[in-house]
Length: 420
Image (cartoon, rainbow, N blue to C red; front, side):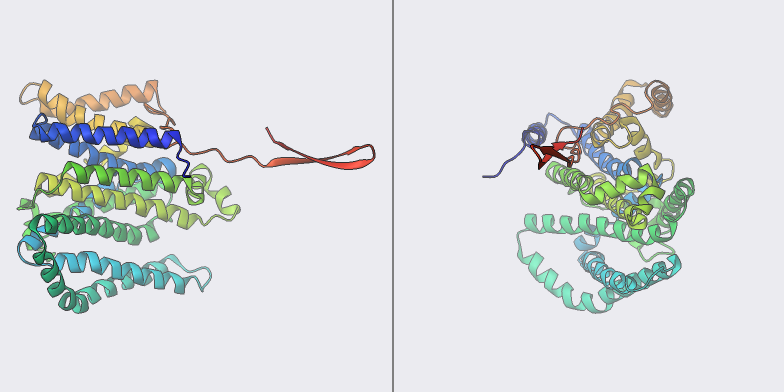
């Protein structure tokens, strides 16, 4: 018989109830397009902020690069598919899988050597990345494009749409993960402050590339600084809910594992973690990549909700939003990040837009710094501090029994008691 904890049943029961209520409201038309967009945006920004909390709140690496990976995840392959070109799926999705396979081989080869330099590791993985996507373009496209066209076009249109949308979300997440892995190898060796500056520079670089996608990059359909139109609006509440729950469960299980304890140890004392045998490089790179994958997934959700992409949506000023959400909710609190993410969008983009007079929309950007300043003075640990829902709360380590020896009537007696 499967023994399920009460906290697990309560959490999933509450999440299911929220899903049903929102779905009913959307089906009955009680939530208009404005509030629907606010809800979907809140879920997307919460996913981005959860990834940042994993990097900064739980691992202690100050990062301002989440919006760069958020932008990478918004890379659109559905526009090409609707235009009759499956190259985006083949190169983006299957090419990324080839790259991951080559990464595994490179990792096995590098582990045979001791004290590999950072530049050697970076160049090895960079060559593997180039080789993987070259294989996808030269070998996989002629092989897979006819197969994909035949299979997907034979299915009902509604089914094909969901499959292509899955490929779009997965491709965005994979591209963000690969980019963060390559970027993290050399940059994570920097100190926390310098790492934050480097990630901010990465966000600015991505923004500049998006401004010039129609000139220096081979993506003319994105139209550079003019913005990309024609993206299908395929994001639904079901997809948003499933992606949000996937991120929460993956992050929760990661933090509850032995790998999660290694991640936390780096935040507490990097030198001490290294002295007890923890691979600090791996413990810093893993949360950075996973958090970036979350951001990439959110980018795909957001792009197919807006049906329009503009580079200005990913400028470095916007990259402070996830950081403010994490600080508001509480560093190291998944619960605080989830709730604050929704409240942030509801307040900033919802209530204040409606309450402030027309023409005063930008004053909402004056309100939240004042609120942040007051909170930092009165409650620096954030709104929720270290509080977690019981399902998300990390279990305490079991105490080992303390063994004592004594003599009773001349015979040795061993007793065990749990150390307090």
